[in-house]
Amino acid sequence: MIIEPQRTYVLELLTALGAAADGFILAGAQAMKFTLTSSRATKDFDFVLDVVLLRRLNMPLAETLQSLGYVALPEAQYFQFEKQIPGSPEVMRVEFMAAEEYQHKGDFRVAVGDKLHARACAGGRIVLAESDYYEIKGVLPDGKPGTARVRVTRPNALVMMKCLALDDRHRNLRGPEHYEHDREEARTHAVDIVAILAAQTDLGKFRVGFFRQFEADSALRDRTFQIMKDYFGDENKPGLLLYEEYLRNKEISGETERSDIRYELRRAQKLVMHVIPD
Image (cartoon, rainbow, N blue to C red; front, side):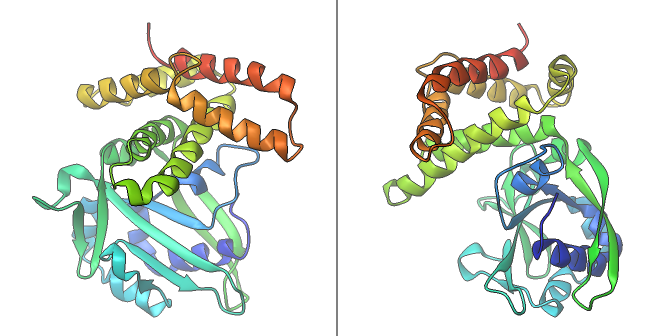
Protein backbone atom coordinates (compact mmCIF):
# COMPACT_ATOMS: atom_id res chain seq x y z
CA MET A 1 0.00 0.00 0.00
CA ILE A 2 0.97 3.67 -0.06
CA ILE A 3 3.81 4.44 2.32
CA GLU A 4 4.48 7.46 4.52
CA PRO A 5 4.85 10.37 4.30
CA GLN A 6 2.96 10.23 0.99
CA ARG A 7 0.03 8.35 2.58
CA THR A 8 -0.69 11.27 4.90
CA TYR A 9 -0.77 13.75 2.06
CA VAL A 10 -2.80 11.71 -0.40
CA LEU A 11 -5.33 11.33 2.44
CA GLU A 12 -5.25 15.10 2.83
CA LEU A 13 -5.81 15.57 -0.91
CA LEU A 14 -8.70 13.11 -1.16
CA THR A 15 -10.36 14.58 1.94
CA ALA A 16 -10.08 18.13 0.58
CA LEU A 17 -11.52 17.09 -2.79
CA GLY A 18 -14.71 15.84 -1.17
CA ALA A 19 -17.25 14.65 -3.75
CA ALA A 20 -14.75 15.37 -6.54
CA ALA A 21 -12.48 12.58 -5.26
CA ASP A 22 -14.76 10.14 -7.11
CA GLY A 23 -13.46 11.69 -10.33
CA PHE A 24 -9.81 10.93 -9.53
CA ILE A 25 -8.84 7.37 -10.49
CA LEU A 26 -5.43 6.29 -9.23
CA ALA A 27 -3.26 4.80 -11.97
CA GLY A 28 0.40 4.06 -12.61
CA ALA A 29 2.82 2.66 -10.08
CA GLN A 30 0.77 3.77 -7.06
CA ALA A 31 -2.18 1.72 -8.35
CA MET A 32 0.12 -1.29 -8.64
CA LYS A 33 0.55 -1.20 -4.87
CA PHE A 34 -3.06 -2.36 -4.54
CA THR A 35 -2.31 -5.36 -6.77
CA LEU A 36 1.21 -6.51 -5.81
CA THR A 37 2.43 -7.65 -2.40
CA SER A 38 5.55 -5.59 -3.07
CA SER A 39 6.14 -3.07 -5.83
CA ARG A 40 8.78 -0.58 -6.85
CA ALA A 41 9.12 2.60 -4.86
CA THR A 42 7.52 5.70 -6.33
CA LYS A 43 6.52 9.05 -4.94
CA ASP A 44 4.44 10.26 -7.89
CA PHE A 45 0.66 9.97 -8.07
CA ASP A 46 -0.95 9.59 -11.48
CA PHE A 47 -4.69 10.15 -11.71
CA VAL A 48 -6.99 9.58 -14.67
CA LEU A 49 -9.75 12.16 -14.32
CA ASP A 50 -13.44 11.63 -14.93
CA VAL A 51 -13.86 14.82 -16.95
CA VAL A 52 -17.66 14.62 -17.26
CA LEU A 53 -18.15 14.20 -13.51
CA LEU A 54 -15.69 16.94 -12.56
CA ARG A 55 -17.14 19.42 -15.04
CA ARG A 56 -20.62 18.70 -13.69
CA LEU A 57 -19.52 19.26 -10.10
CA ASN A 58 -17.88 22.53 -11.19
CA MET A 59 -15.67 22.67 -8.10
CA PRO A 60 -12.66 25.02 -7.88
CA LEU A 61 -10.12 22.18 -8.13
CA ALA A 62 -7.11 24.38 -8.87
CA GLU A 63 -7.92 26.52 -5.84
CA THR A 64 -8.19 23.40 -3.69
CA LEU A 65 -4.75 22.27 -4.80
CA GLN A 66 -3.34 25.74 -4.17
CA SER A 67 -4.85 25.85 -0.67
CA LEU A 68 -3.01 22.60 0.13
CA GLY A 69 0.30 24.05 -1.04
CA TYR A 70 0.51 22.53 -4.53
CA VAL A 71 2.23 24.53 -7.27
CA ALA A 72 1.74 23.94 -10.99
CA LEU A 73 4.98 22.91 -12.68
CA PRO A 74 5.65 25.53 -15.38
CA GLU A 75 6.68 23.05 -18.08
CA ALA A 76 3.57 20.90 -17.58
CA GLN A 77 0.88 23.51 -18.38
CA TYR A 78 -1.41 22.77 -15.43
CA PHE A 79 -1.48 18.97 -15.57
CA GLN A 80 1.38 18.39 -13.09
CA PHE A 81 1.48 19.83 -9.59
CA GLU A 82 4.01 19.52 -6.79
CA LYS A 83 4.00 20.13 -3.05
CA GLN A 84 6.91 20.14 -0.64
CA ILE A 85 6.09 17.90 2.32
CA PRO A 86 6.54 20.01 5.48
CA GLY A 87 9.56 19.02 7.56
CA SER A 88 10.74 16.57 4.91
CA PRO A 89 13.02 16.65 1.84
CA GLU A 90 10.33 14.70 -0.03
CA VAL A 91 7.58 16.03 -2.26
CA MET A 92 4.10 15.10 -3.37
CA ARG A 93 3.87 15.15 -7.14
CA VAL A 94 0.53 14.61 -8.90
CA GLU A 95 -0.09 14.28 -12.62
CA PHE A 96 -3.50 14.28 -14.28
CA MET A 97 -4.57 12.38 -17.39
CA ALA A 98 -7.91 12.11 -19.17
CA ALA A 99 -9.48 10.26 -22.07
CA GLU A 100 -8.15 11.57 -25.37
CA GLU A 101 -11.72 11.93 -26.68
CA TYR A 102 -11.98 15.16 -24.65
CA GLN A 103 -8.73 16.81 -25.74
CA HIS A 104 -8.49 20.18 -27.43
CA LYS A 105 -8.13 20.14 -31.19
CA GLY A 106 -4.44 20.48 -31.97
CA ASP A 107 -3.52 20.19 -28.27
CA PHE A 108 -2.36 17.28 -26.13
CA ARG A 109 -4.34 18.50 -23.11
CA VAL A 110 -7.90 18.22 -21.84
CA ALA A 111 -9.44 21.21 -20.09
CA VAL A 112 -10.95 20.09 -16.78
CA GLY A 113 -11.41 23.44 -15.04
CA ASP A 114 -9.87 26.85 -14.62
CA LYS A 115 -6.08 26.39 -14.46
CA LEU A 116 -6.44 22.63 -14.30
CA HIS A 117 -5.76 20.46 -17.32
CA ALA A 118 -5.07 16.78 -17.94
CA ARG A 119 -2.76 15.10 -20.42
CA ALA A 120 -4.81 13.29 -23.05
CA CYS A 121 -4.24 9.54 -23.06
CA ALA A 122 -5.51 6.58 -25.05
CA GLY A 123 -7.58 4.16 -22.99
CA GLY A 124 -8.68 6.77 -20.48
CA ARG A 125 -12.36 5.83 -20.84
CA ILE A 126 -11.52 2.19 -20.18
CA VAL A 127 -9.74 3.15 -16.96
CA LEU A 128 -12.89 4.94 -15.76
CA ALA A 129 -14.92 1.78 -16.29
CA GLU A 130 -12.24 -0.59 -15.02
CA SER A 131 -11.68 0.69 -11.50
CA ASP A 132 -12.59 -0.34 -7.95
CA TYR A 133 -12.95 1.51 -4.66
CA TYR A 134 -10.43 1.02 -1.85
CA GLU A 135 -10.21 2.54 1.58
CA ILE A 136 -7.08 4.31 2.77
CA LYS A 137 -6.54 4.88 6.48
CA GLY A 138 -3.86 6.90 8.16
CA VAL A 139 -3.15 10.20 9.86
CA LEU A 140 -3.83 13.64 8.43
CA PRO A 141 -1.18 16.40 8.63
CA ASP A 142 -2.86 17.84 11.74
CA GLY A 143 -2.37 14.52 13.54
CA LYS A 144 -6.00 13.46 13.42
CA PRO A 145 -6.90 10.02 12.05
CA GLY A 146 -8.15 10.05 8.49
CA THR A 147 -10.01 7.69 6.18
CA ALA A 148 -10.67 8.22 2.49
CA ARG A 149 -12.08 6.24 -0.38
CA VAL A 150 -10.15 6.13 -3.65
CA ARG A 151 -10.86 4.62 -7.05
CA VAL A 152 -7.97 2.44 -8.25
CA THR A 153 -7.35 1.16 -11.78
CA ARG A 154 -7.81 -2.60 -12.16
CA PRO A 155 -4.82 -4.74 -13.19
CA ASN A 156 -6.22 -5.42 -16.68
CA ALA A 157 -6.47 -1.70 -17.45
CA LEU A 158 -3.07 -1.08 -15.87
CA VAL A 159 -1.47 -3.57 -18.27
CA MET A 160 -3.16 -1.84 -21.19
CA MET A 161 -1.87 1.57 -20.05
CA LYS A 162 1.61 0.17 -19.48
CA CYS A 163 1.69 -1.34 -22.99
CA LEU A 164 0.78 1.99 -24.56
CA ALA A 165 3.36 3.83 -22.44
CA LEU A 166 6.04 1.24 -23.25
CA ASP A 167 5.51 1.74 -26.97
CA ASP A 168 5.47 5.53 -26.62
CA ARG A 169 8.71 5.67 -24.64
CA HIS A 170 10.56 3.03 -26.64
CA ARG A 171 9.85 4.85 -29.90
CA ASN A 172 11.40 7.98 -28.32
CA LEU A 173 8.77 10.28 -29.82
CA ARG A 174 10.13 13.26 -27.90
CA GLY A 175 13.45 13.24 -29.74
CA PRO A 176 17.10 12.24 -29.15
CA GLU A 177 17.62 14.65 -26.25
CA HIS A 178 15.21 12.48 -24.23
CA TYR A 179 16.57 9.13 -25.40
CA GLU A 180 18.21 7.95 -22.15
CA HIS A 181 15.26 8.96 -19.99
CA ASP A 182 12.74 7.44 -22.39
CA ARG A 183 14.66 4.16 -22.54
CA GLU A 184 14.74 3.98 -18.74
CA GLU A 185 10.99 4.66 -18.64
CA ALA A 186 10.37 2.00 -21.30
CA ARG A 187 12.32 -0.52 -19.23
CA THR A 188 10.24 0.35 -16.17
CA HIS A 189 7.00 -0.19 -18.09
CA ALA A 190 8.19 -3.56 -19.45
CA VAL A 191 9.09 -4.70 -15.93
CA ASP A 192 5.75 -3.48 -14.56
CA ILE A 193 3.79 -5.40 -17.21
CA VAL A 194 5.51 -8.65 -16.23
CA ALA A 195 5.08 -7.93 -12.50
CA ILE A 196 1.33 -7.27 -12.79
CA LEU A 197 0.76 -10.44 -14.82
CA ALA A 198 2.90 -12.54 -12.48
CA ALA A 199 0.80 -11.37 -9.53
CA GLN A 200 -2.45 -12.74 -10.99
CA THR A 201 -3.67 -15.87 -9.20
CA ASP A 202 -6.02 -16.75 -12.06
CA LEU A 203 -4.45 -15.78 -15.37
CA GLY A 204 -7.33 -17.30 -17.32
CA LYS A 205 -9.83 -15.01 -15.58
CA PHE A 206 -7.50 -12.07 -16.10
CA ARG A 207 -7.28 -12.91 -19.80
CA VAL A 208 -11.08 -12.78 -20.14
CA GLY A 209 -11.27 -9.42 -18.35
CA PHE A 210 -8.38 -8.04 -20.39
CA PHE A 211 -10.19 -8.86 -23.64
CA ARG A 212 -13.62 -7.67 -22.48
CA GLN A 213 -12.42 -4.21 -21.51
CA PHE A 214 -12.00 -3.42 -25.22
CA GLU A 215 -15.61 -4.24 -26.18
CA ALA A 216 -16.33 -0.63 -27.18
CA ASP A 217 -12.91 0.04 -28.74
CA SER A 218 -11.72 -2.67 -31.12
CA ALA A 219 -9.07 -0.37 -32.62
CA LEU A 220 -7.41 0.12 -29.23
CA ARG A 221 -7.68 -3.63 -28.60
CA ASP A 222 -5.86 -4.42 -31.83
CA ARG A 223 -3.24 -1.76 -31.11
CA THR A 224 -2.60 -3.11 -27.60
CA PHE A 225 -2.38 -6.73 -28.74
CA GLN A 226 0.02 -5.74 -31.52
CA ILE A 227 2.24 -3.94 -29.02
CA MET A 228 2.34 -7.07 -26.85
CA LYS A 229 3.37 -9.15 -29.86
CA ASP A 230 5.91 -6.59 -31.07
CA TYR A 231 7.57 -6.29 -27.66
CA PHE A 232 7.20 -9.78 -26.17
CA GLY A 233 6.53 -12.10 -29.13
CA ASP A 234 9.91 -13.82 -28.95
CA GLU A 235 13.19 -13.57 -27.05
CA ASN A 236 14.62 -10.96 -29.43
CA LYS A 237 11.75 -8.51 -29.08
CA PRO A 238 12.53 -5.14 -27.42
CA GLY A 239 10.25 -5.64 -24.41
CA LEU A 240 12.15 -8.77 -23.39
CA LEU A 241 15.49 -7.12 -24.10
CA LEU A 242 14.50 -4.30 -21.75
CA TYR A 243 13.41 -6.85 -19.17
CA GLU A 244 16.76 -8.61 -19.55
CA GLU A 245 18.56 -5.32 -18.86
CA TYR A 246 16.62 -5.09 -15.61
CA LEU A 247 17.54 -8.66 -14.67
CA ARG A 248 21.21 -8.09 -15.52
CA ASN A 249 21.26 -5.06 -13.24
CA LYS A 250 19.81 -7.21 -10.45
CA GLU A 251 22.52 -9.79 -11.14
CA ILE A 252 25.24 -7.15 -10.81
CA SER A 253 23.74 -6.03 -7.50
CA GLY A 254 23.67 -9.64 -6.29
CA GLU A 255 19.87 -9.91 -6.20
CA THR A 256 19.66 -12.71 -8.77
CA GLU A 257 21.77 -15.45 -10.33
CA ARG A 258 22.94 -15.59 -13.94
CA SER A 259 21.39 -19.04 -14.35
CA ASP A 260 17.96 -17.66 -13.39
CA ILE A 261 17.85 -14.99 -16.08
CA ARG A 262 17.13 -17.22 -19.08
CA TYR A 263 14.39 -19.02 -17.13
CA GLU A 264 12.82 -15.73 -16.06
CA LEU A 265 12.85 -14.38 -19.62
CA ARG A 266 11.04 -17.47 -20.89
CA ARG A 267 8.51 -17.17 -18.05
CA ALA A 268 7.91 -13.47 -18.80
CA GLN A 269 7.43 -14.13 -22.51
CA LYS A 270 4.87 -16.87 -21.84
CA LEU A 271 2.99 -14.71 -19.32
CA VAL A 272 2.50 -11.84 -21.74
CA MET A 273 1.67 -13.97 -24.78
CA HIS A 274 -0.84 -16.04 -22.78
CA VAL A 275 -2.99 -12.92 -22.38
CA ILE A 276 -3.45 -12.48 -26.14
CA PRO A 277 -6.37 -14.54 -27.49
CA ASP A 278 -5.48 -17.22 -30.03
